[in-house]
Image (cartoon, rainbow, N blue to C red):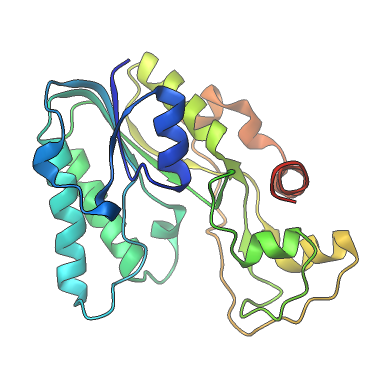
Length: 238
């Protein structure tokens, strides 16, 4: 398959670029959109996304920036279009990041050929930014800004790659929640017999079941998240 991956300089995008031997597109180094080869792709995987509203930018401009990049990618000839959204779009209150993800989801549904929208939770991989959840899983004690009852789940980059391969081979489309069960940071700390200094901000991963279509292709989504997260951190991030 001829694949284009956006957001290829780090995280999931970097992994998928290597896995699929894909053509990279990296907005973080100000790569002009017109430099993207437009000969056509079997699959475009859109990972690039600004996580927060940059300092000095309005929310409206932030939304417009993310939509413009999606428009550019959607205009390229393709057979499948995969957008990496987030389970955060299902939170009771949406921040600018989640609202922008929803806007791009709608655009992809309208304009993509064979659109597949994936809504994962926290993604683990060797290219990942090691935030507070990972630090707790590594046995660190902080101090942290996150509260003990903050919830996270586990999904790794290989899971996403496998799901994309199977879904595109089956010409699957739709909007899928891709996550395992949730665990609290206090549960992670208790399993390590650590006593972190917790903060007051409780981050909550939407407590929803994974989509049946995703589970059918990736049955391991039914496995418990915490032991898998602990094993990954021990084996790959220690």
